[in-house]
Length: 65
Image 1 (tube, rainbow, N blue to C red):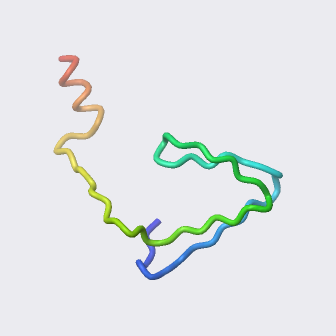
Image 2: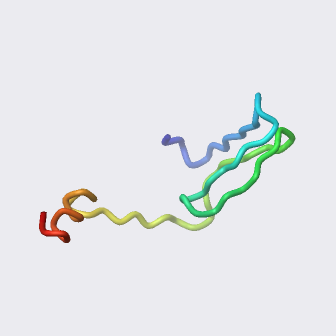
């Protein structure tokens, strides 16, 4: 999802009384129906690394398949 940098998105859990939010595939946070989650622009920029080949091509090359 891409949104303008000045936007703030607010989310609230509905339906189930609790859920788990996973950040960057590492940190897990328990969310309850009373929690409000806000998404906004970070204070620090993110550095994105782009590889020439896709993941599976790199694995295949490393394993010489």
